[in-house]
Length: 492
Image (cartoon, rainbow, N blue to C red; front, side):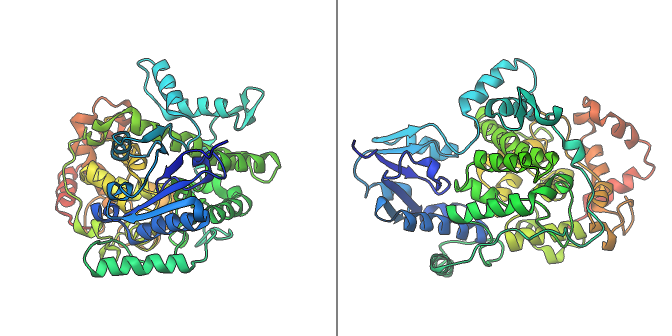
């Protein structure tokens, strides 16, 4: 039998599940234009190039590895037909479909297909396309955590059990996340990025540092094994908690490896399920992790395609403020609010935080201040190692910034300092008081929460989940002072 046609794999399609056989020839392209289009985090640029070059080295003679200015320039050097799995961005998808001699296959790397989602969406009629409903269907389809057609333990979702505040200690007593060892390829990438930056060809945000995330399939599998054995048991209780001395908490830190295509979400989900069935992991931890994989991750992927290009331009709350320079430049040292300073520092130094700092510290602050949701989405895309356009569209535009007006969530994810105080240790030594909404020690999140409601009162008036807060809005005697103070605040 003849070898299959050469498979063109993008830099987020680096795992074996993007190929159809162990002998299939592969095309890998490193395009310099990609790093020129956006000002990415330095560690993200390093990780992506390292992973791409490691994959080329692993494949050896099977891989045609082309370094060029653009994809089109690289393709001019390639002869013969190509196949490619559906890319993860609309721009890349449109590009590959415009090329002669390139066959575009269905996308891979997700637990459910786009056809499955569209069938499910059509079946919902006029009902909202909520993630929880999709997740239950995905559980039934994959058989994950199912017993005889029913959810394991009798419930689909154990989220109510997974909202514990952090323990009274500086960090969870867990083995730290797996960390890879850098090699000659990493050093080569670092030298190339340094040279390109000196020439003025590229510019980055954030700090360089030792690579923290897997760049090979072997590293990713070791990281998964380490997480399931050492960290997953504690994931459920503390998945929503934050500690200033423990950026990773009990999270897997596998999202970057998964979004590079080094791991398949189903292999991660099945590893978690197997650990639960062997009695090594409590059900609430296994279910919480699996919900993130085949629930949120798949749902966000499908929402990106289903809602279309116009979705990323939605701005239901008319939020038009530009991101301030201190935020865009990750200027953590000049921010006094302990929570925001610490989270910005983690982004600057690691290009990663887990989902609660993203949503309830970074996103919450931007929502309260009316930052442009498209700008904020692009910032997350550029500054996080696991950030891609498809990841951030619904996560930021819809969930974090409520710019879709409630298409995927039932209310804005806005919260005051009381939430951060309950779910973290940040408020203990902060210059602001979480209960204060006015004065020099007014918490920017508490005051910002009431400013957000006052500014959007008419737009949110029909939301039943916000009715009590909107009623309380006009019982605040110093509301005018709160609004004026937050409008004038340049940085927290």
